Amino acid sequence: MDKLQQGIDRMQEQKFEEAAKLFTGVIEENPGEPLGYINFGNLLLHMQEYERAERFFERAISLDDTAATAYYGLGNVYYEQDSFTKAQNQFLQAIEKGLDEADVYFLLGMSLVQQDYHKLALPYLSRAAEIDPNDVDIQFQFGLCLAQNEQFDEAERVLKALLDIVPEHADAFYNLGVICIYKEEAEAALDYFNEALKVQSDHMLAAHAKGEVEKALNGK
Image (tube, rainbow, N blue to C red; front, side, top):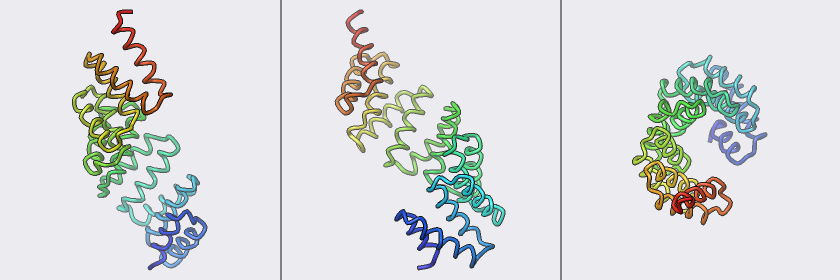
């Protein structure tokens, strides 16, 4: 097993100091190759050392401006610091350079959601959901984005499919209830809010919404 893979393994095992030594060795042996810098950048990202991680990813890009995973790593650095416009630009670069994975589309979509560009986010979240149909976070955020774009039937389909994966997803039940309110299906909304509260008794949004629907149904 080469040093690069050993370093990746140590990083996954949370043995960060050992991983750092291995990645340093990779860089010293191959200073003109971007992979050592990219993986050291990923390690620093895990350790929340964002300024150092940024420098390593930028160094990788200076060595190979087609290194898609370096742009992805740099996007993560900015995303973790709530610099969503800068993150968006890096994720777009990663995709343009050939990265075709669920995570990059998801984080690009979420960068746009964080800036309230829900319509622009939708195709990227859709692509992420298509690539990884079993990822709970991706499917949930895709469902939310559909609802925010008033595509209620499709949002309902996605959130119901999510409940097949995670039957006790309180937020999915809550948002299905909200969709039912928009569709003027008060009784169905009440059922979903009750389901959310069964799963999570302190779900404040569901409790509030349930109270409002009950008032409306009782004519108060």
